[in-house]
Length: 106
Image (tube, rainbow, N blue to C red; front, top):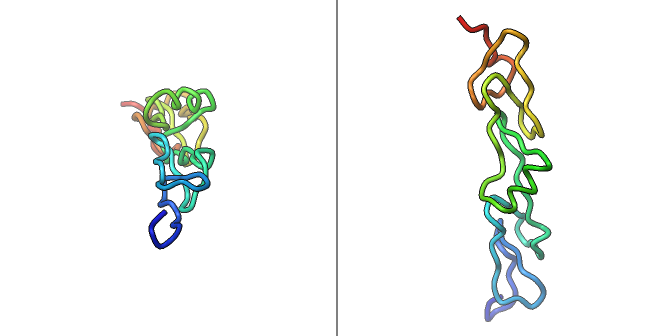
């Protein structure tokens, strides 16, 4: 709020009724412009090569961060809740983003 009246909170912040300032969302969380509650804060979807499970989401509340990279020999697309294993006999690097990253080891 300013002397000239109320203003919306910026992205990744929120405020309640009659608040005089905005509060940042918890670490690793985002929110839209004009958010009015901590309930408006959420974890941004993970990018390809990373995932977030419901269990990880609960643990993240206690830690910083949110997305976890896929392990070696697995991959994921964007907004994944798990990683997929490469086909039998194929390998991939940590954080692989598609089945195209899987290859036969020499």
